[in-house]
Length: 332
Ligand code: TRP
Image (cartoon, rainbow, N blue to C red; front, side):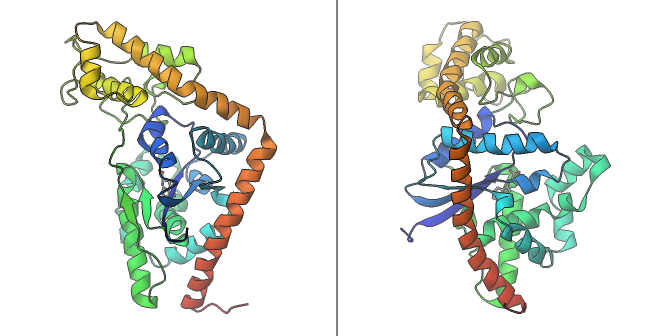
């Protein structure tokens, strides 16, 4: 059991879970529990870098947990927890702040782009965010961190920080590798298919949420942007909208792209878009129903995040104690 390599990832409960995060990440996570010792957490501390409504944050954090479980992350096989329940994250983050250079943080592309988007709130947390993320990862001695393209730079920095710290104090941290899934959909916005589907999309029709009711999902797919060729053919370069829909349909039904092209050969985009919408409705239905069932059982969800926090704290504490000793803090 202890032989398994450890994997860890987090998602910020700063918005509802999207079809993109399901197809691109969570769906794959559920399948990895046998091979890896998996930790997944709600990165609630990270969300504060952007102003949040407290009641919404609380609600979304618990909803996200319910949705993780509904997506197939079995709490018996995976450690699921809420970041702020494990104070070692903040404690290690401070120390890592002191081993990370101002220049390194200034080069983070996410900091630069978020500074542009949140011009009125360029807070210190936004700047040191990668150190908190490094703490998240290094506390658990994680070998692998499944992340999307947008987080690769943060993972690189985490490795640099770990190597720097190990260089001074000996082998304290496992140096993590980003884990790029062999099969991972990159779902694009339905209305601007050159951009990734994102919960921060300004156009609400571009993004499908896992908890969207069927009629909303169907409507969003009916409005999806296509092209004027009238041919269901996979060609992301020239036909980004249709290619995205093919990818989504393939992922929802388990068919490959060729089969999808054949199925809709000679048919109009209307038929195809309706079929994709129906497939996604059926994909989301059991997830939504199960998440709602779980949300009605607060005691169960509480028992999951408590047990998760206990397990996570145990490991996190082992690492933190080692770090405290190495840097010269007095043991009590
Ligand atoms: N920064 C990640 C994101 O915005 C979320 C995150 C926080 C994370 N801590 C992490 C991901 C640790 C992987 C590992 O998507």
